[in-house]
Each structure stands twice: as structure tokens, then as C-alpha cells.
Image (cartoon, rainbow, N blue to C red):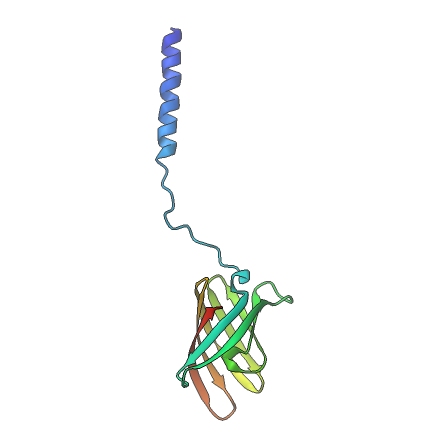
Length: 135
């Protein structure tokens, strides 16, 4: 009788272990993208202008929980405030040094951000794409 009980306990233990071992693991766990991932110095370039390049510094905006500040955004003197939502970035309409800007961006990976935005200088509206590479 004791052998039957021991055998059943061992069998139940082995079966429970085998089911636990069969749990599917996530091959590509999603990384949480917070605004801290954006902080740093970036080499920026934009088109369609004759491939302008400059350096931008991204910092967190201490006055909010979901915004970052981007220095020299669109190669303009001043900071742009950007809303961070994971990998997606929103450039709300704002004025930098007399230029109205707005658009979107995307965190591609830890070394690359892509942007699409417009700049209205009061006379013309121009549309740009830019690439930021981490320095």
C-alpha cells in the first residue's frame, strides 16, 4: 500500500514538472521604452535640405512625467518639448525661435531615432525627415 502511494506521489510530481517545463517562453520580450532611453547626445541630419548635420542633446523635462527636451531641434536655436509614448514621439505644435514646428518621431533602437516634421517660418511651410544617431 505504501508503495502505491509513493508511486502515485512520484508520478504526480513528474507530471507537474513536465507541464511546467512546457510553458512557452517569449522569444522576443518587449523592452519597455521610457523617456530615459532617449537621454544623451545625438548626431542629427535632416533632408531634403542639403544634408544639414548638427548635434542635439536630449534631456528629460523635469516639469512633466512624459516629455523630453531636444536641443537644437530642426537645427533651430532653442529646445523642443516632445511627448514620449513608448517608442512613439509626438512633437506638438510649438514655437522655437519664431518658427512653428510639429510632427512625429519613432525610437527605432538605442542608437537611432527617426523624425518627420514641418517648420513654418511665417513665410513658408517646409517638411523634413531627420535621423538622430547616438554619439
